[in-house]
Length: 235
Image: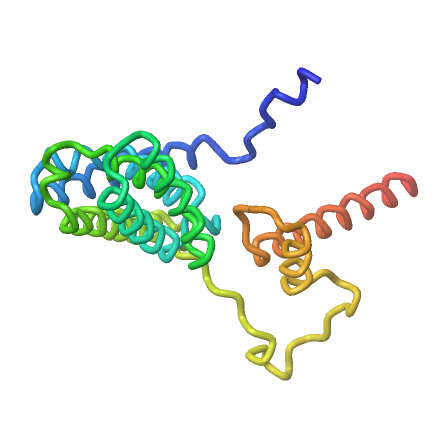
């Protein structure tokens, strides 16, 4: 039972850890600096917690569904609107802050922009510092500016370091050329994986296209292993 609590091995290379760490540091610094130039450092530094969490997603797991552009922009906007509305109606208490976070989660799911750091943002905007409270609804300005700056830094840094971001949208079946080589009708496709994920009715930070690529890569390794075993037996 205790063994279940032990972490699995990380398959990424140390060079990728370093790449993501540098990107996270630069992205967070840039977004806070930009926000501070426009709205003051007191307001900008109050947002550094959610921004740091967003940086982990955008630079370390940029292929995940929770790290795509609409996730961070829509998530921050949803959390900002909900938290300020709750603060106006119920006041700025711990209970209202937690309620705002829960309502923000519901709205993000509905808008398909789930972004975990936005939950922290909802809490922060309700239990805000005096400078942010004084801005009232104008507090959406620094929130969206910081999110946009973080997104721009992720777009620039990831692509400059040869990490494709944002994740390329899946190609619809009608867009596949007619001369495309035939595929096995029993092979698993991204559509099958999307339906399977829907059947499971749970949150998974992975796209069907990523799963399809992983399955095809696994099949290739399995074929190589099978050929190697056959050759070794003949030798």
